Image 1: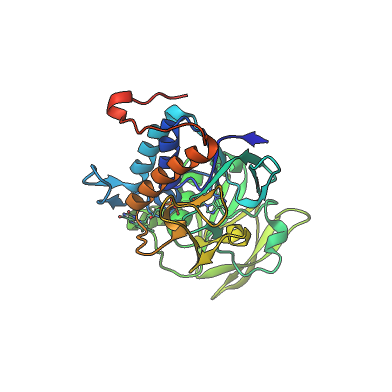
Image 2 (image 1 turned 90 degrees about the horizontal axis):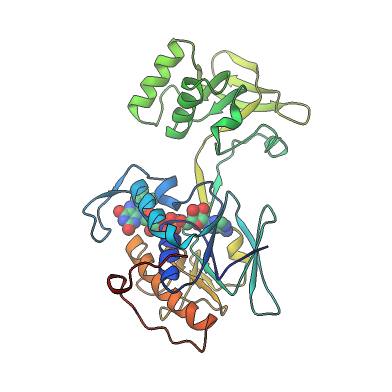
Length: 336
Ligand SMILES: Cc1cc2nc3c(=O)[nH]c(=O)nc-3n(C[C@H](O)[C@H](O)[C@H](O)COP(=O)(O)OP(=O)(O)OC[C@H]3O[C@@H](n4cnc5c(N)ncnc54)[C@H](O)[C@@H]3O)c2cc1C
């Protein structure tokens, strides 16, 4: 059981900055995220895009902003449970909450801040009937650690940057022994340089490129041993492989949070703008996941919401202590 002061569900920019603001009040945080890395939409959707409306940064790449937020939070030693969606929440007799993830990891705290953004990013799966029975048995939708594929044969499917970049990486670094990239069209959606590189590597025999084709079946005894590839012109072919990795992108959905008894409106959690508390005392919702009159889904607004929410959390945890606002210029940052 991981015990902390504040469980933050969602390690996007808003969750990360909240660690800093909580730390200034000497409150410890532990973040849970279903994605394998922190950063939410900034890391997952647009890490290389510049953002122009972060105060004090005329321009900052989304990925750089996340690196900076991680650095800013570091003195307060946040804990992370990554790659695990928060599945359920229970109230305990001692007025705390236990948040359990899909993998059964338990976290306990008097305060829960939901910074879940657009929700859990669920992989878009190809319509193969048996695919779910092969999940974690050779079928993966996200590459968490490329080393996992060392010495293995992989079939990647998809036409976006993720499919192109991972095919290049696994082949170029000679991690996988064989990389096949299957895409249903002859043209790709990814960056032109990546497309050209894949074509060049296919020419050298480093990547087996199979376009105008789709993976339509999986075979194996308890784990993936081969896939069926349906080629628009040449018909069906069976390809032996150890892994099948469809990289068709991720779609957001509020996910399990929708069933926690919180007031939901338009797929977002209703909050009181006094302190961004929800209808359940002790649970707050900040950032893109909440809704109120005049809500703007901006990082800047999420930072403000997290800042006010931790002040309220402090008063809830220490009802007898007075919290006096201290400027960081005066007090500095006293880490844990
Ligand atoms: C292309 C693009 C450009 C943008 N440009 C700008 C811009 O210029 N300026 C600006 O201010 N904003 C911009 N935004 C919006 C900005 O990215 C969001 O406002 C911001 O990411 C919200 O941060 P967040 O931390 O609330 O949520 P998110 O970044 O969505 O992070 C939420 C995290 O919670 C996790 N999560 C959700 N549910 C669970 C669960 N049950 N268990 C575990 N983890 C969970 C998710 O995996 C995710 O990592 C842009 C968005 C996009 C897509």
